Image 1 (cartoon, one colour):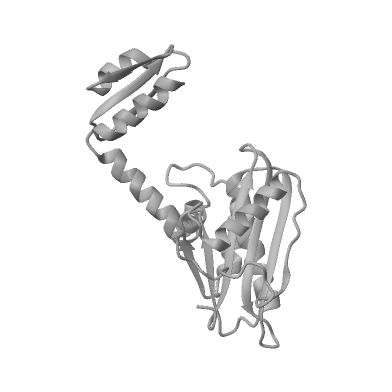
Image 2: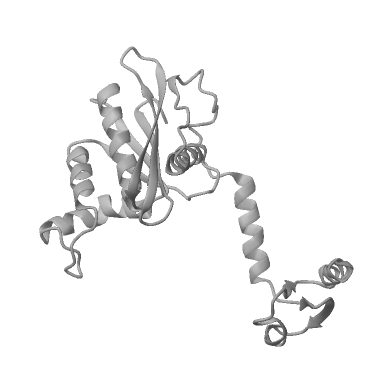
Length: 247
């Protein structure tokens, strides 16, 4: 993946929307002398939005990559979990331009200043925009999230700049989703779709079993301290009754 590409991971974060925010980019590419290098970038704004930080991260990452790496024969691959960024730059922005920077609903396009900068930078460059799942274990996305969040919180994380071989995060170029997280999500989806064996509720020290959700809801709705859970088999029901009955 890295032989003919410059890899850029980006992310943005804000504490409040608007509120203090941070942005981050991790750039991996072949430096002018031929070695593979990693450059971590990040910054903070006192009053911003999450979307502005997502756009800023992409702008900063591409800008540094263009300046520092041999880009004439290279493809940029930008990995982000922001559908706003990917859809905006690949689908929406040209329509906005044609309408005088108005949306289809004839409203002013938000963050026009950043979109114009990003569009100017992308013009003529070979860029592939890759939308990845957020918080799914993609290493570069996780690192960017850590950096952006730290800056949003007013911290100053240490940013790496040096050879890929010495970079402490060894699987930074692995863009596959963490298999364990995916398995957990799949299991949760399967369980959610499974037919209920029963519903168990606990309220005021008393545990009850319900055959329908409606019956369970009538008991717990609006009640402080109430707990409830769907079970999918008799064994799970028995374990839950035993657990809640002891508490």
